[in-house]
Image (cartoon, rainbow over all chains, first blue to last red; front, side, top):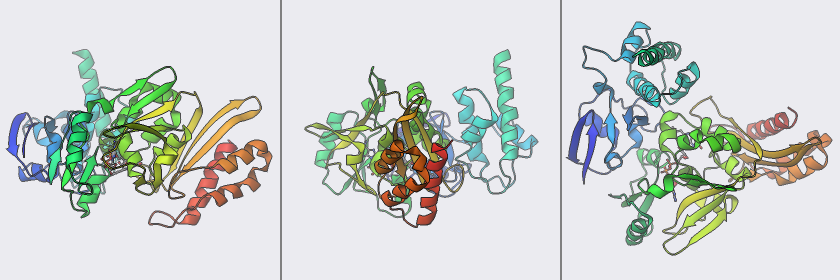
Length: 158
Length: 273
Ligand SMILES: Cc1cc2nc3c(=O)[nH]c(=O)nc-3n(C[C@H](O)[C@H](O)[C@H](O)COP(=O)(O)OP(=O)(O)OC[C@H]3O[C@@H](n4cnc5c(N)ncnc54)[C@H](O)[C@@H]3O)c2cc1C
């Protein structure tokens, strides 16, 4: 079947097998930030933004994204100018092996777009669905707290 | 596999009646179905996505009832001020539900129709005596949730019938939800429990306890609460009535004995707080 949706700012109109997951599709398009982890929605490594909300690409069949806006971390920066969250993850040492990092960034970007009060509690809550088995959560949470409160202050002063 | 996404109930029934029984599956958020497909359950010949049935996404409030569309996501329930205010146990269950990614996709209708003994929204819905509205091609019928869920994965849904909404009476009951899992987040409940009650100076004037993951379906612990309301001082002895009511199993998450202990401890702690 033919579906149409937006992927990282581009309009896509493509023929797909309706049984294919969004995870399989994105990786076949060489968007390798979207990691193939557990296939069950447990680990969050395949998290992407769909209409501004973080979701597991492994639990979504391609026809379900018809008309939707899909974003992966590839669209967050142009490899020279990193996204604020990415900069602070680097500065705070919040990345070790890096496998879970794109999923965490997607979850945190979704939280940022919700425009609610930034607190350690809701940062931790928004990372509930992202498993990290090496760095742990302390550094990512610290990086997110700094980055999100910075953005909030910038937003208020501009 | 063929995929359909009807935009109205009328269109849904037309499509559904054309797909042979046993070869079609209805899909809501997919958070229960997709892991089954990933584990090797073959995709159905006909997959009918309910997500575009716009009317089933809304939460509406009248003076005496709260009506929740079956496709309302866990996150939308969580964020609704009236649920936070008047249906605290339901709110708490959504708060402890999976992680953000799943809460944004999973629906209340999926949690009910999946009929898992451990489904987290179920104890609150039993304790608030939820009425389910089921719609078929010809007619609509209403069933209380305890008559709808028949066993693990088994419901009273007829062919071509779907759950369209859930209705809760606004009785302003006090309520509380508790869940014990093997870790704090993203964990299936080993035991979950919802209590609803009313109180006056003399203590409870009404009390209902719904317990999950301790039997094939959620149980309302009527015999226990009745005896307890008659004679609260006898609590230690009355715990035996809980043991008699439940039928937990051993599985990969916990033993039956552990479930018995946890449930009694949670109820004990709640009643003696
Ligand atoms: C990582 C992970 C964590 C989870 N954590 C929790 C948790 O903490 N607590 C918990 O309770 N559950 C949890 N779940 C299970 C699941 O997310 C919930 O049960 C969710 O509510 C299912 O809703 P859905 O819309 O995704 O259902 P779907 O998967 O779309 O459907 C489930 C079943 O219900 C049927 N169905 C759905 N809607 C209707 C309808 N309106 N009418 C008729 N039939 C219908 C479908 O045909 C299917 O058989 C988790 C799942 C995953 C993958």
